[in-house]
Amino acid sequence: MKLYNSLTRSRDEFVPNEPGKVKMYTCGPTVYHYAHIGNLRTYIMEDVLDKYFRYSGYDVTRVMNITDVGHLSSDGDTGEDKMLKGAKRENKTVLEIAKFYTDAFFNDCEKLKIKTPEVVAPATTCIDDFISVISALIEKGYAYEAGGNIYFDTSKLSNYYVFNDFSEEDLEVGVREGVEEDSYKKNKTDFVLWFTRSKFEDQELKWDSPWGVGYPGWHIECSCISMKHLGETLDVHCGGIDNAFPHHTNEIAQSEAYLGHKWCNYWFHVRHLNTSSGKMSKSKGEFLTVSLLEEKGYDPLVYRYFCLQSHYRKSLVFSWENLDNAAAAYNKLVKRIASVKDEGEINADDFAKYKKAFTDALDNDLNTSLAVTALYDVIKADISGKTKLALIEDFDKVLSIGLIDAAKKLSVDSTGAEAASNDPEAARIEALLNERAEAKKAKNYSRADEIRAQLLSEGIVITDTPQGAKWERK
Ligand code: AMP
Ligand code: ZN
Image (cartoon, rainbow, N blue to C red; front, side, top):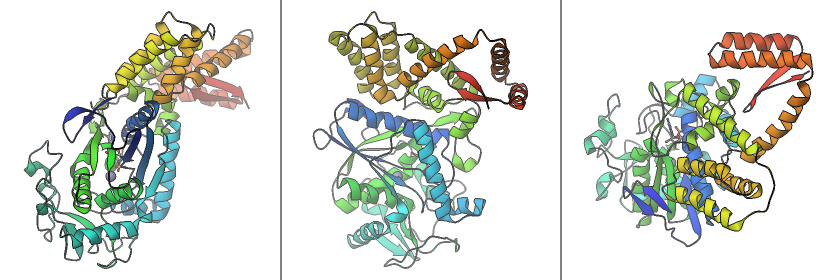
């Protein structure tokens, strides 16, 4: 398999450290708010990578942190702790906020069929591990104490900027517009490993340490959690592209300084989901969530399908129109699968031929849109129904868009609809549902809501599904 590696800036053949095994690390969410669908694009594409490794026969161990402390408003070391910001916004404690949004995150993941990693570690449960690595970094001369904080000394490294597609000046956190410079740092690029001197005296979570009561920096969390569960070498490290600098650059700096050797071989970065007004971000306050998609009648798996249609290394523009197109294509796909007859025998040669087209696509730097094309080719192919269904089920182990289940459900529902077609009352309701669907398409949400309310007043409840609205009497 060829995979683009941000470290070498080339598509490299993927060779894990230990044959047959893949150690994978994923930067987890900062749980101060709901994950937006941009964050989830990253987790969907990482899930495809994880599942494709497994599909190819690797034994994968994947670890993810939960950032529940230490991630400040700027990805550098200034601003307020995001968790504290969330707690103040909702008048709750940091731990209540962390629990609520961690649960919400995994709930969204389940709806998008994103597998939970083998290990999920909240940063607040690993404080002793951070302290032990920071102590070793001080001992080895890579870290220093200044003004109460412990900093990593980037001048001790011959090559700090491993992800330096930008000029050094652009990357320096200290000189970014609107970011206050920390006068205690020896070098502008030094970063905090442990804070005791917080400008925010109300920092809720603090722990005792050899350097005083305080809390860890964000970057040290991922290095320590990865090393704790995956050992001294890592095959693949994943994250959104915004994490490449400074977060991943700092992770490499401190992990390799601590270990004394190379740490991670492949860096997998997913480009952003943007809207017409720019990058979707939690800090902007306004963003789209899985729940919002559901409220508007979209199946979360339509969003997953939308993501699969484009390459992870290209930024993706979200618009309702694009999502509507994906929904229409997904529904059509499910209908076509529902019409495949479960007949004939599985032909091994046909199976191998079409499977090869699918694996060729994914072996080519995880080209999911070509993999989806391979799926369409199966549906069109002149092969037995049984072979088609076996291939679709096989591909869906990686794509995870619930194709077979959705097709089965569609067959059951359409039998029900046929029975209803002789009933004039059912026909009247169906006509109203069609009018509502048209109104939604024309963005006439008030008419759509009016129809829902009218039916509800008659005791008829509407549920939106990927195959359209369904109704039942309560
Ligand atoms: P956070 O919860 O902010 O720590 O981010 C969680 C993950 O989402 C990280 O891997 C980020 O790099 C990624 N991410 C943030 N914004 C976007 C976006 N607009 N599109 C895709 N990924 C994103
Ligand atoms: Zn991380």
